Image (cartoon, rainbow, N blue to C red; front, side):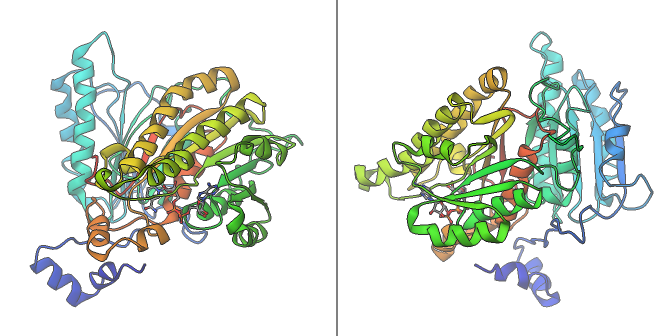
Length: 443
Ligand code: NAD
C-alpha cells in the first residue's frame, strides 16, 4: 500500500529526476495530529470589493493568527461579487498573494447563493466555481482551494474551521453550500448535565453508529468520532466480528455483528441503541467489478443491495422509529465513481449515484421533520485494502490523477465525516463533499 513514488519524489535525486521528466510532484500533506492541530502560519483575509459580512469573530476562532509572512491560509470574501466587472476584484486580490501561500496551505473563496432573479449575479457567482476549480488544479505544493457559499458566517463556522485546518488536507476543488442557521439542526450546545460542548471533544455524550467499521475507512471514521468524544457502535458483518470487537475495545465502544442487508437490520440497529442515536454513518460498501457485458445478475444485485437498498431501508427505519435524535446527523458514503462513472463499475457507479440522490432528496425533509441533517462524503482514491487490490498500473493512475498527485488516507474521509457530524454543522445539509484531492474523474 505504501506510495513509493511519493517517497521517491521526497528525495533530492527523486525530485530532480521526476522534474526533468515532467512527472507529477506530490508534496507530503500536512495532516492533523494532536501535536500539530492547526496550520502553522498566519491567515490572510481579503475582500473582493466591499462586503457586509463580519467574518472577523469566526476567523479569530480558527486557531490561525493574523500576522505577516507567508500565509498558511487565505480567505477571500467574494460574496458581494454581483456582476462580471466585479470578478476583476477577485483577480486583483489573489493574483499578488497566491505565490506566497505556504505548502499544504489553504485558499477558501466565500461566495453567495446564486440569485434566481438576477442572472448577472448568478453568472458572476457561478464564475467563482470555475475559478476555484481551476486554481485548485494549478496551485500545487499540497495546497487546496475550495468555495463556500454562505449567508451567515456564524452558521458556517464549523465548515470554515474544518477547511482552514489540517483536517481537510485531501479536500480540494469543492463547492460547499452552507444554509442559514436552522433552529432545529444544531445539536444542543449544552449536554444533559448542563456542560457546554468541549471544542476538543464536540461529540462527548453522543452516540455514533458506523457501518462497515471493522477495517478500512469505517475503522478510521469510528476512531475519529471516538477521538471527538462519541461513544461508537462498530457494526460489521458477523464474519468480521472479531475485528469489529478489537476496534470497539480499543475505542471504548461496542461491536454490533450484523449484515446490513438482513431484512430486520434496521430493527436490530434500533434495539442496540435504546438511548437513541446522534450520528449514523453509512460506510459499509462492496464492489463486484466487471463490464456490463460480462456482469451476471449475481454480481449486480449484491452491490445495489449493500451500497444502496440497505442504506435506504435502515435510514427510513431509524428515522421512523425516532432512534435518530433531533440535532442528529446522517453521513452516507458515495464515491467519485458515482459522480463520474467508471468502466467496469456500472453496478457500483449506479449504487453510489443512488446515494447522492438519496441525500439530495431526503436532506430538506429529514431536517424539517426530524431535525436531522443528511450529507454524503464521496471518496476518490483512498489507500485501503480495497485499492491495494487494484492492478498496479490502474492504481498508480488513480493515485496521480488528482490535483494533489497522491492517494488520500482513510483519516481524510474520517475527518470530513467528523466535520459533517459536528454539533455545530446543522446548516450543512444535502451536500456531497468529495474527498478526492480534486480527482480528474468527474471534476
Ligand atoms: P473495505 O472493503 O476495506 O471495508 C468495507 C467494510 O464494510 C468491511 O469491513 C466489510 O466487512 C463491511 N461490509 C461489507 N458488506 C457489509 C454488510 N452487508 N453489512 C455490514 N458490513 C458490511 O472498504 P473501504 O475501502 O474502507 O470503503 C468504505 C466505503 O468507502 C465503501 O462504501 C466504499 O464503497 C467507499 N469508497 C472507498 C473508496 C476507496 O478508495 N477505498 C473510494 C470510494 C468510495
